[in-house]
Image (cartoon, rainbow, N blue to C red):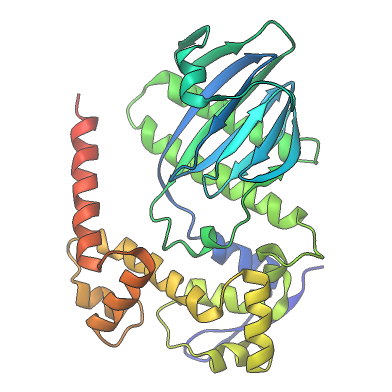
Length: 339
């Protein structure tokens, strides 16, 4: 039975809801992508490739066979079996190969020396045991401002033998392959929305299976006090918040709340709030009909200068610069989309 906690709207109205469902739903609202790509690889042992750090999230699904994954400088090996889904939310450098001793090539070199690469299918490797791997990437709308992305682990490994995982992974990817191959009008929009679904389903499964003894966002979402605050910050980032008001909402002392929040979520509560506000601001700034002053007011800042300083500290550019860059990106995308 779900734990129930009292949630509060900014107007003081009290809402009662199962905290696990409410918190997860609110947190997942920030998952949005502006694009996605996929590639099918038919690999025969020995094989291995390395992907450098990327500005997008990577994923791998093993349809047949097995593979060994190593992420970043951590030499811990993760064995991936048929039906497994691996998501690297931060686009971390990683290596995939059939066994720990196999030679590794940069992905670009593997493609260049492949037996064939046609219609999105790569065939490479030797003459040994075969596996089929689906690889791809998610392009987030705004990585630095996304509060959820900032606190996710380097790698999420969902084992296909878990009840339900194999079924939805294969269903989504069957649809993705059909859409990408058909080339029908609107295919890109459909594929991008399917990317949303795939990533959200992966996170839901991750939140439900994460080790409850280790500090993590999944534990934070199950914590009645911290989970309630997370849901509120995502739903109403524009409301006036202080560390004291957030701790009261959680039913904890200020010190205990700040310590527990940072331990579970990975950063202090007020910085997490800044991300929530910046994420909403980034969406508003992509609308040229709203002024920067209006954006500042809508995300909870009393003044445009204060908003601009907070936005630039987090994203590295001012709101006006972000707007110009987004407008230029949309123009380039429209130009490339024209026949």
